[in-house]
Image (cartoon, rainbow, N blue to C red; front, side, top):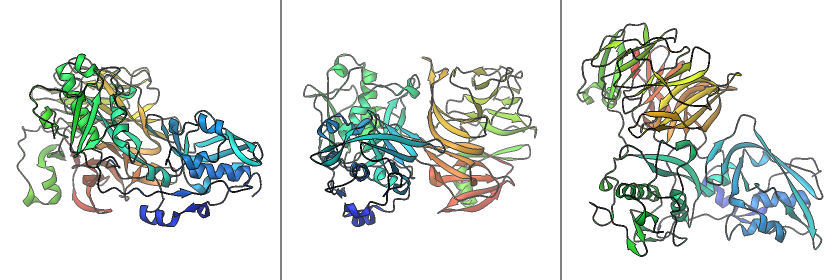
Length: 589
């Protein structure tokens, strides 16, 4: 291989590669399903990790071969990455911090090595990046990672002597998916007893419970500040650097802050947070929190809680029961699942009288209790509201308005541009008169056109689609910071979960962990797409003229409405045409 060529495949240097690949499945991309993964921990009985072994540096290996071998061997973290460290000098091995982050590059064949002798440059198209906290960032279209490694000779053999401080790991999607899993960290709502999830990636295998517990003790991530709180006081830590699992109970020994500083309600939140987070570890059915050898006490809770309900926290919300169908100006409520599967399966829906809505108003949003609604006019310049008390339109407050949406607390959301042409997001207080102008929410980072906004099922996060001047759309998630009584005050600087979309026609939450869009990509047609939080996109089968996407419950319950009013529900890997509607509205979304 010359000094500027693309290095070849490395299968011949991996012992047991064929067996491992056949057991683990094809390496055609990052995991695309939305369920949270589970991994090995003390006490787990049915997880058998598959280990890949790597050859040490071959005598006489060239600098490029040494770098090539190092990148491949760093896929294994056995014995603190001992296989990869064989390619480094002693000083470089001591300085290397593999857990500082991960660069996931698209494919081993796309990795190029340039140079020879004392400098070798590495270059590859990027699929995603992982920071030291496990936060997953999707790559921008065309993003490329480059880095230069220094080499020196040790006893006549080339070894890597210099690595950039933030080099971390470079992994293919196959090796990343084998080593890491996506898990939810849990925080509490600042107003009521409900929980908010944050999705990150952790090394699977022994020590998973310890890694999750340590991460859970840290502060709320920046994009959720003010939208979520933690019951663990500052400086909380594990007394012993381990969370053993004994008879299916994760044993968490904490420093004294939670006993000496935390309020009763904070203790309750802390236990619910740790319980929900550690239940993701294989074999864990309960969590014990203790301080100085004594189990943490909680008023009203006897023994070890084995459910969130035992701690006074609401279970994850069920699928929406009701759906509202629009035919002309008429609205009617129906049982969602029953309507999709056949009239004989429908349950009665206890709904208040629904108003007639003039055809001028479209893309309707309806509150979860079916009592209030918002529509936007065809010019996207004004809105219409109705409540049990009144109906009407507020004064003009913006233009290029998006589809409105409701959160589960009855607050409305809409975006557009104000009179000065600045992008804005507004919220609409449920208890204010219908002719009251919406309130602008503080979002100083907002500098691109907003094409969609939708609150998450729990109501404290907002999915936001932003489109740049070139027509490229990215999707973000921002925490909705609230005052003590729950009034929204600001949107935090968001976390980007998707990039490079075009022609975004609709956006909706699938569940707590994923967003769905109808959108295209450069070189790809408009299609329904699932965007898991902190994971690669999962395209669904095309629907001609797809215009709207909602769900009757989770990813399997995704429903698409095409431009001709046809309703398509998901059956296996395809779609089944169900009915025709003028408009389909899921209350509370």
